[in-house]
Image (cartoon, rainbow, N blue to C red; front, side, top):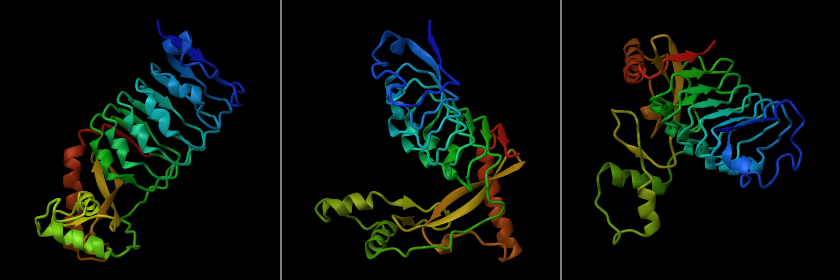
Length: 280
């Protein structure tokens, strides 16, 4: 029978609140559900990170400021509740939890979502309401099993916004772009190993009319994608140059219509995946 641990609404949080050998103890090995909500933890207790069989973990209403990358060791975790803390960022390592289906990060101070979160292929519910989000990574469209996305209470942008800061490409990047764009042949005997690795880091520009690549220098652009014919979510695009940006509101009506059409075309492939988007 799965062990159930309830120690919520106490004053746990100081050193030694949980025994160091918890993961090796018989109770720790059989523990499947652990509720530590309503305590005073400022960080995830290291003793928790060794509970390999843990399936449900609740640490809501504590004083957490971060999520340790080592949380990826909880490979059996299906439910993670970290709402009501002071978390400012999400580590990419959180995406290495293959069974995670419910992730609650509401009522924190999170400003951005790492694109790696799209690797959570089992995720069904993602609660991000009452944070500081202004956009979502476009990779979120890859969450094929996501049924509920809660975004209310975030300063989500309400119109297309461009990031006007753009650092021109370095000479190395310009050379790399030229090699990739013109399909210049090269091999290990032609270039040093560090340049070969650099060329393998090229990212394709998502603009279908461009066909270019970029390395370190790119333009960030907010683009809205329609979900369920009712909500338009702001997703972040990375383009190779300002010339690849979508037309702004001052452009011609035909150009604006084309931009909206592109967004709706993207939505056709993703709308059936998203069953519920909560913005208000």
